[in-house]
Length: 414
Image 1 (cartoon, rainbow, N blue to C red):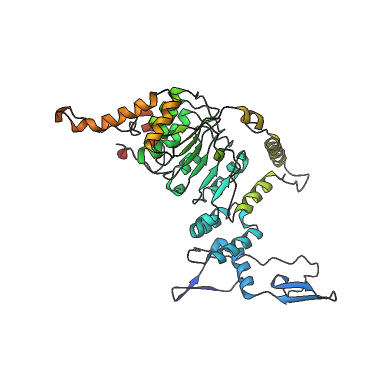
Image 2: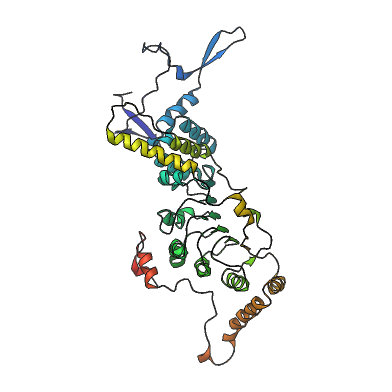
């Protein structure tokens, strides 16, 4: 195959392909593999009969072709249109060939499968307290654009992480559950995270569940969440927010959510897990990253030795690191769970009135009256209908923040 010409048939026409270097066949592990004219064992299946004699049968042409494509998957342009049964088998073959452990081709191959099969490749990703995996495989994780659930709890994102731009991009439009608790996220960080959504009104359009617990957030940060139109459940436990009448009124007026007296089961982490074809790939990344690299020679350079021991200490510290929040502390803390009421408007007002001593009910009535005011009186005294606090009221800080995102121009700012 080294000097042969490769032809590809596309749409009924034959064209020559150049510049493609095919993967070399893997040699068999047998020490007798010295004669090049011996049969290649990877094309045969070895079994034993009832008498204990060794027998072999040839693999099907489909299996041989599948292994060949898997070894050269980085040369494939597209899998769109191929049946999902073929895609599943090809993904397993590529995984067995350890293609996804190669950082040079892994992002391209994962994008190839995601573009063709979407949610089947990975529909849910749990990286809870696995921040080394997130930072080491950031480029690959960005290729999973059909996620419905993403758990980044305890991943040490902070207020200015590069992943923020990906979370609010249209590539994660299908996301319905997002867990970003325990990341040291302050009001400024949540402001930065939601800035593209509030200004361009794109991103996280279908988000229904949000966990921001164990972050130093205050009541001021709630106004940054008004850009999430379908938000139904919110976890603000262990933040700087204090449960009381004022907090309940604020969350009801801004987000339309009420406090849940009973903790919501969706925030107990029992239902969050990694699901899809790439589940074992995620596990391979974590195992491969936690293994210590082996020194090939003692006479290696001092720089290589320092890098080795530095990596060893880093992995050891990560594996021995305690979770940000212990189970006992989390169980004993007060739960600030909020949800959208499923009752009618009249029943909702009664429920809110009983929990907030009547203040929220009067607030709801005032909102309804203000909506009817433009129909009465002189036209000169009429005012536009009352809206939620406008997320488009930009400060100089937010304008500078918006302009820092790639692909955003200042001329588009209202």
